[in-house]
Length: 389
Image 1 (spheres, rainbow, N blue to C red):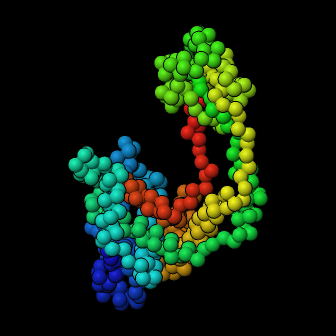
Image 2: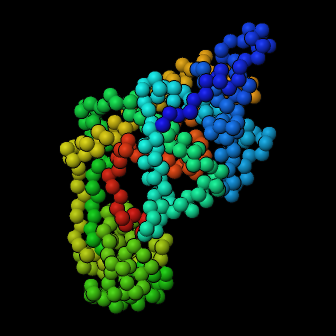
């Protein structure tokens, strides 16, 4: 899929007056707002036009039941400056894609669109996706499928650029080891144990339950948990769950790790209500992870960080190098060319990472996971019981 490009001279032929005045190739022709290295950004009547972008953003406000910024307001001016920033940046990235020989095919866009439809608009037994819900959402967001496909194509291009720019990024074994030595504690596995609990609102009910189970009858404890416990994550498992030290609220945590195996606690009050807790297993002590256990995890984390930094630097260089090759009409300001004295503190030029799109459309948001394959999960893993207590 060839991303649409409009050479400046095809939008309009420079008028005789402009030629007589000595205007060169960087003049902005009629029907355009900017010229970016010879390619024009149209004002309207194009999926890449300024008005199409702004209207899509305003539609996103309305879709979220928010009042769009009023014409002439500071918020509207900031939005429109942001639109120019995004459109210029899109065009610069696409020009770089051409220079590097990157091409996004219709087949790639088709595949990605089908993935999005299936993820966000799942169908019934005989349908891959809900076509009616999909079309309703496009209408709600003021989108056409053509524009959504264009957004997807641009996001795929960003991913390809990210891969190309960062293909040689790596981290050394010394860097990995140094990170481990400086952050060894974060890779330790906290002490943990198996417990069961019954959560109720009233202390009187908790006292009654405690009297029934204080002797350690496991079967009865499980029955009462299923019948009365208000913790949906554990009630149907007889109240059982695995906790790590420090994962639950302090009152629960302290009691759970003070109990002897098989012992039942008197009712314990937390912000969630009253708990009757029993210890099902001995405490497994905290264990430190070896360097070998987490080496690849650290490598992935540091490489992703280094790739992001390299991409940010590359994009910033691209924008700075283009300053003298971007010409905009006075009323359509590219903030990169605003002097420090002229700058509005509310202006903010955002540098994209693969999958991020400046457009606020829901259709654009649906494609924000285009960089999922590039993400490195550096988390040590979350316990399912987090936040239950």
